[in-house]
Length: 358
Image 1 (cartoon, rainbow, N blue to C red):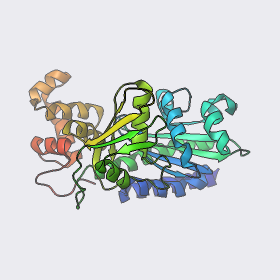
Image 2: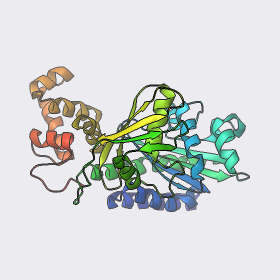
Image 3: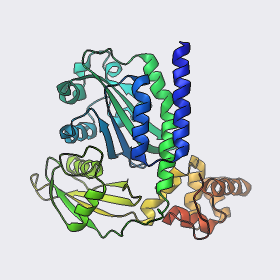
């Protein structure tokens, strides 16, 4: 027991150091994968960066998995027919779940197990959401080969304990990405790609091909498109309505991916990439700076230009309480005035300050 506690203490300490290092998300996932493989005892793993607002997967770092199965994995994730989809785990008020525990040891009850895990030679699977402060910063799935024992309660407890510090590390990585890099990425005109019904790239303009190349993921996807393209396209195809996700490119450019199904079932889905607008940037910045729910409400009213007195009336607070919240918001965001706060939250930079707060 003491040994397990020592392992947990060491793991949590290392995660804290990684959070302070402000690594890009893909590099952070690589470090976390190596760190957790022993303590959690998995044979294959898949890490996802997500749109912090919607939770849709937008990037993937995988080990021990066949990229050819990724489209099926996205389909199973979004159709919502399994108790261990990331959204189902979240809806149940949990951060962690395993297929074994969700099915009371009867893995064959799980659609994911029957259609994805078992054909790939895997048995139990452990899944984690890295949600923190209202933001959905990432998720991960860890698979064990068939024949191995299922995940036990102490392992699930360890997974639950790491969820918060990993969420904090991912939030720090997102916060850093919201600031312009020293070498700004090239300006992006609207980029258009068309995916077929199976998620394969059918056609693309020059801008889209350049973007897909820039967003190429470790290991690559046989379908020819990054995770974000496939996720938003599958969502639009599934619902028959336009879908949207926010995604950060490896060179630090935040984009909005818009998807809409074309006329017929066999016509595929069009995905259009554009730079995020100030309105799309706002929730990213509010979540990334770790504002409390009440501070988020105050900040949103401040961005609209609402006076302190009016904010107090709208939120049923006293004026001094609103002033305290504004002071906390300025402190957390590293800004000095409302004008600087609005510039930071809406445009991602400060006109008079240098680097963002750590």
